[in-house]
Image (cartoon, rainbow, N blue to C red; front, top):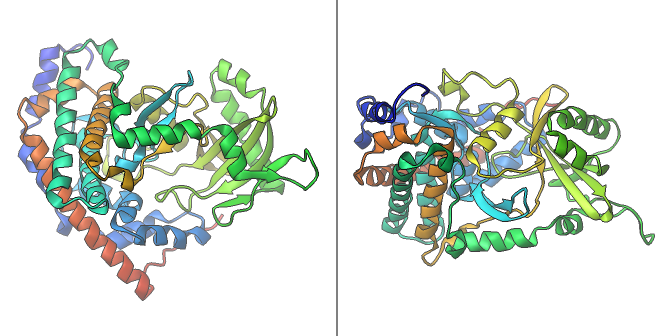
Length: 444
């Protein structure tokens, strides 16, 4: 927006109401789907590890919220046929209540922020809000809230987003870039995540994921075998994974390269993670620095294209999807993992980051007894900060205006999409019983 005045930027946002009216955002058009949800899911399995696809479907079939977590390709297709503002910011892409969490900042302090960016891409800002709205309703239902309470949580989330975006629109741009969300520790679900993160030290990860290589006292440690979720990698495959550290080191800043040089790799494993990522290749490397009491774990996680890419014609396919995720994360987060980077193995693209370094997430049970609404406000504020940092808060604020109707509209959408998710979940369960959802997955 270089060369335009603040007034012109705000007016641009207001003008986008003609393209997509604020009252239109409660629309959902399931009949406009070009492909059934089952088919979209099957397509998304292509290229994944065939042996793990059954596990991914099992996780999705366990509950409507589990289905929602794994069905970004379905929601991306659904959002693409709805009216769009065309006001772009960096999207989290998978904005839901469990994709915010606590982690250690580079200075060692624990922070709470959006922490999953596998689907990140530049797109219409409201797509993140709609996915978050649906997730709040589904999480509310799963944690025992009645429908009015779940919808009210969406209202609180979007009202907080709008209020914060209007505040950002009045702030100096440099202050927006370094704005910190306060009072997080007083929100019960966030406090629970911070406590988990405080306990999730590298030493705890060492005890959970590794074991002595032999019964001999002082024997070196190596990864445990916890199949199918954790499997040691040896031989040529392990050498290929370790070789990927070379291009990774080269893209790190010099001070990070220097720090990493003190650590030597000890062992390699394959790890199953998340719900949406099950079936993608995910490797962990265990390093030691100043002896066994100084462990470092790096995760090397395969990154395919964002599920939104096909629906955003102006979003050119990323030359490297690991880089797409790392740069999208840095654009939205206040502070990011100092070891965040990317690499490649056998023609596949990977994100590199620390594994379990003071990380803590919420559980749906944490949202009971009044926790949902307070947590929803945190979600709204953090999304607003991420969009303001990576987009234009004046344009977004211009579109939102000063009224409160947008929040009610998004709450209605959240309920409608939660209902549709439950229908799609039932379809998935029926198709699994009938043996119909057997995607054609390619092997290594």
